[in-house]
Length: 200
Picture 1 (cartoon, rainbow, N blue to C red):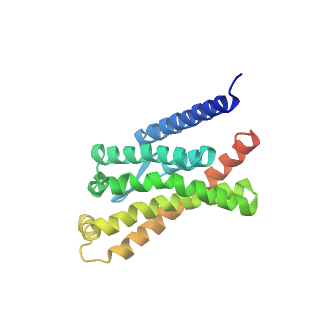
Picture 2: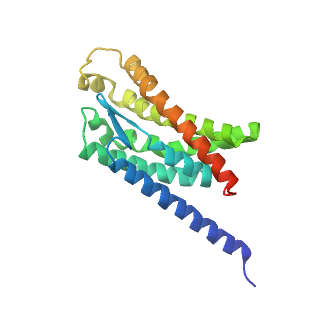
Picture 3: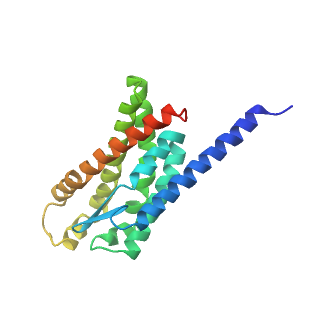
């Protein structure tokens, strides 16, 4: 007699590994394309690399999202080593470059599930997961920089003595909010498409 539960579990594991492989490959390719994965803006870089992480979390759960987030974090670390800016030194610390990216998938998954239980609308749930998942990335990275390197960061950008909290908050607003809106729109559209195809 065939163990249907074991067979279903194997199919599920294969699907999860496939999603991880495909979205991780997209993340790696994005990180290698100029002005796509990491977009230079002054002393820092904006990014849309969190979008595959959020999509992976919505499709297959927080573990898959966290795994793709790990790949994102590793590309961020690699990017800091190979294409440095004046602030890249801070991204050599995995607490800045990797940990916040791993948490994106966890946050996005639970936001999606929570909003869906309330609204029953895939578009709204995907929009909020994209928005808050993206903001979690921004808050996590800039928050770690503030906690670990506030004064050194201000010296690096030529603003020694200025209020690091205000400066980083302004950076979060000018870079993080547009990133979040782009992520929200893309993730919501992808979520609706996947539901229509019966993959959710």
